[in-house]
Length: 77
Image (cartoon, rainbow, N blue to C red; front, side, top):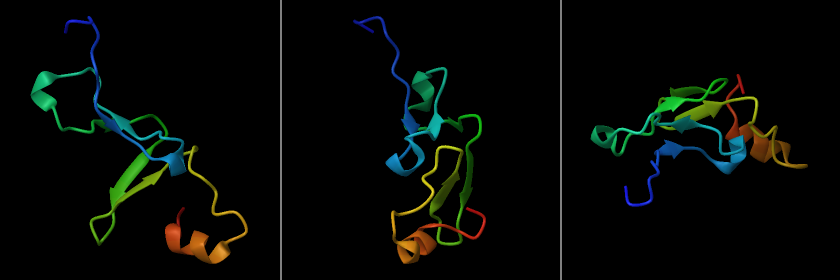
């Protein structure tokens, strides 16, 4: 408040260009919320309760490592 700016919470990771979610507009009653997905980002929970993210910014795979790539991605990307 002293600086006159609002900080929003969000979520992202380097594997998807840090594009994930944002809690906009900022709401003091929603602290701890990661917000809604940005346009083009889809999210779902796996059976193991892992948050899975898919977007145009996702990496295509691990360089020259198809086994690790197969471990990291679901069949639909």
